Picture 1 (tube, helix red, strand yellow):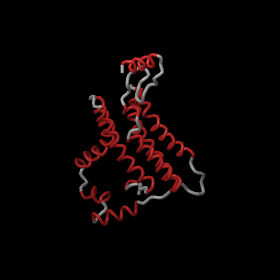
Picture 2: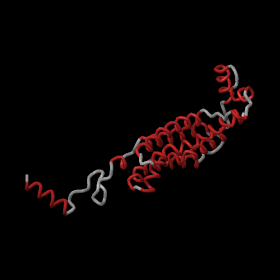
Picture 3: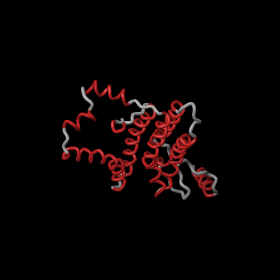
Picture 4: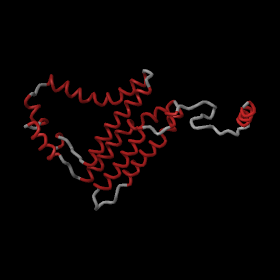
Amino acid sequence: DLLQRGARARRGMAGGDPAGPGAAGDGGVVPAGRLAVVPLDRVTMAFAALFSLAVVARWPGARPLPAGLFLFAAFLVLMASVAPWLRRRGGLAQFVGDFYALILAVFMYTAIGVLNRAAGTSHDLLLQHWEQALFGVQPSFDWIRAQPWPWLSGPLHLAYLSYYLILAAAPLGLLLSGRSQGAREAIVLIMCAFYVCYATFAFFPVAGPRYT
């Protein structure tokens, strides 16, 4: 047993034993979570595939397929692929590896808007029929006329605008308070909700009452 230990030690000193999975170049061990493809990366790749499928299915046949939208989908896959490496680097690179999907969310919405404008279809009338059947009225039209009070509409509009703040504040607050794992979990949950809504929007677009 002593001879075997000595032989392993000599091989290690000579560089004969390659670093195992998770070993850092300086001899330290990189946490496995920073090396692995995490659920955020997987759902990002899945959304990129769904978005590409929506482009193929809905883009007008008389126009050439948009290379820019496919490049954007490829970029999402690229970011999801390199995110484990970014998280391993630490510092700013790790921040990008953790937050890249949330940072790119606004560009995802823009890309879907390009698709929907090109397709030129919207299902607002169908949604309005559903609302009429469910509520008996059109809430977006009748509510403000039934209660036209600035003291009520002001706070409601502010509550709506706070949505944008909450998206960034929730994971950032967790990160700044030292709860980095909680920040990552919050981002995964937020982006899962985004991807479900965005995929629905890409295949079943609705402009909303403001535009109809």
